[in-house]
Image 1: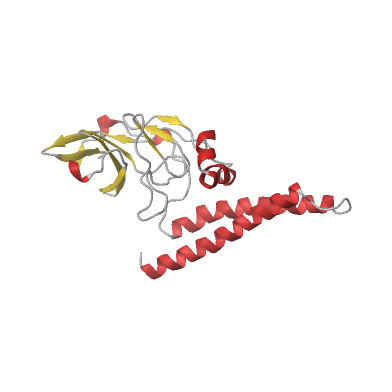
Image 2 (image 1 turned 90 degrees about the vertical axis):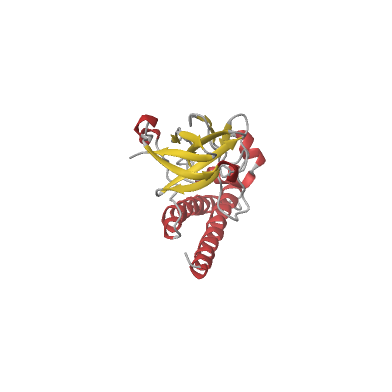
Length: 223
């Protein structure tokens, strides 16, 4: 993607996002304080309309505009799509072991697949790079202010909505928008949970077999 196209896309998304937030905030204000006694019913109706319009606008922005920017639509990935390790016979070189930072999910592209490599000392695990909740990258976007979260208690956390996954088997150990995450991240958690009212859960994430040969990380992929 060219720099010019990226700037146009960011401008469009930014303007659309501000308009969406304005609709939602205006709707909430009118619902909470609809006006005097004579206009309370009309104010409440307008507030509900603006709130619904804002939520629809936010959903359309993520589902329609994001794919046009080359980003994945925020649609859930079902655990039923997980492929077992015994069907992964093609080995791809992800790179030298020491090229992966310790305790941080690092995304690589392996034969068109987006794979997150998680190194903890000499132990390496590999999993799908996109969180199954809304297909946002576990390692965040390059240069984005939202940074990848360090592995804690053997789990990697999606930095966008807080879902946590066991790096060894991909099982979900905490759902997105938990009370702890929402408290620590008011915008990404408490606010965005309103936009994702239709998608509040995450399922297990795909993992890949890993082996180390000559200090190179090899990842098993499906044929």
